[in-house]
Every structure is written in structure tokens, then in C-alpha cells.
Image (tube, rainbow, N blue to C red):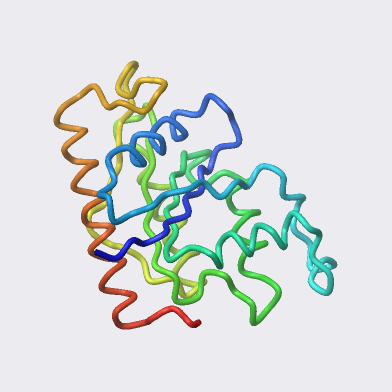
Length: 190
């Protein structure tokens, strides 16, 4: 049984983010074939092409963390009908300099939660467009727009609603199947 490393990004920089809670839940609900670890984005400076000739150590470590995983999972809130600036900044760092795009041919998936009735649907659509440009094979089904309600996820990542828990387990099972399919067609370079 092969194990796949999945790096996940929490789009919010807040330590109390509901999307951070969702990420904890996803780690717990993932099948054993997926080994999830967070790739932190909060310490990255604002991207500028002035750095392209010499990335700072934090950005080099960030790009290496992406290189070290088989796939990436974006857990994003929705800010002003789009993705948070910190997440876009991280994507800019990872996709540059030109010709060294960390997301090219790397399987990816998007999920998020919000108190609003449509979850993070608009932010996810925005993020999907960016990931398509970055040439990242994107899991299109199952889409996951989670409406967050108080106490839906405990501080330690337990999902209290059985229907939501089952849905998230299915999402993670589908993510595993998607990663297998993509890496069968586009094997990682040694």
C-alpha cells in the first residue's frame, strides 16, 4: 500500500481560523494512505520579482516543502469574494521565478469553510482559476463548500455532525483516488 505525502495550506493567517479547524478534521479523516502535513505561509514576505535571482531562506524552504510532497490541498476562507492575500502571496512565491513553478503537474484540491450559506464557493472558483494557470491538475469532484456552524468542529478536529463527517471522509477518500490517478499518468520526477 503506497503512502502519499500531501502538503496542505491554510489560507487564513489567523491562529483561530475555522479553516484551521477544518484542516485538523481533514487530517483525522484522511485514509491511512495519505500523510498530511501543513506547509506554513505566514512567514513569507510579500513577493517581488526582485527576489527571483536570490530567494530568501524562508521562501526557499517553502518551495522545498512543496517539492517534498506528492500533492497539495488548499483549505481556504473567503475574503471579499476571493482568496486571502496571504494565500495568493504564497502561490506567487511557489510559482516563481518563471520556469520554476512548484505547482506544475502536482495534484491539487480545494476546500474551505465559512459561516455563509455557500461556504467558500466564490473563493474556491477564484483559486481554481489560479491553479489552472499554474498547471496543477485539480480535483474537480467532489466539490466541498462547508457552511461552518458553532461547534461543528471541536478544537482538536473532531467533526460533531455525522453527515458532515461522512462527507469529509468521502472527500478525503476521493482525494486519495485522484492523487493515484494523476501520479499514474504524470509520475513524479526523481
